[in-house]
Image (cartoon, rainbow, N blue to C red; front, side, top):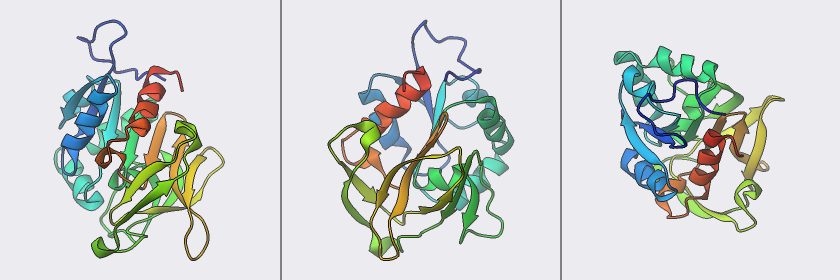
Length: 211
């Protein structure tokens, strides 16, 4: 699904995807997007948001990103963009931002919302508990993806409108680590850190309306 706020200067057929550049691993997402053949730009304000066909919400610190979005007048434009159907992809902290409900978050934390899911912040543990492993992700192909989890959330539950794309085994049962809800995509892990950019290619296909 294409965003209704396509940049006026975009060429026919050209896709421009923004990366919310308030905090987090912005540079890595820009490089990953460029590697799959789209124009990638930093978004720091509402004007920049209005010029892109889709938006990546990067990993980082979800509370800090939400506080900065509020301070810089971006939270309401982001929520409006979700309501208007603008495709968004959130990795790690970005997944938390796209959740309608957050567990173990700060009392003053405000999500963008849009995906009917309950996400537990830092569910896999603290920084010292970070890990990586192969994850089956059929939506991007038969080959597993190498996933990097850094103070990662997991999804506790999803609504009927949400498609579960990937899970990982845990002591209490399989945990959801990738979901899609229409034009919104989210992963607990950081595909931008591994050189395997199939998740970004999937997001570009969502933006182009071919996924």
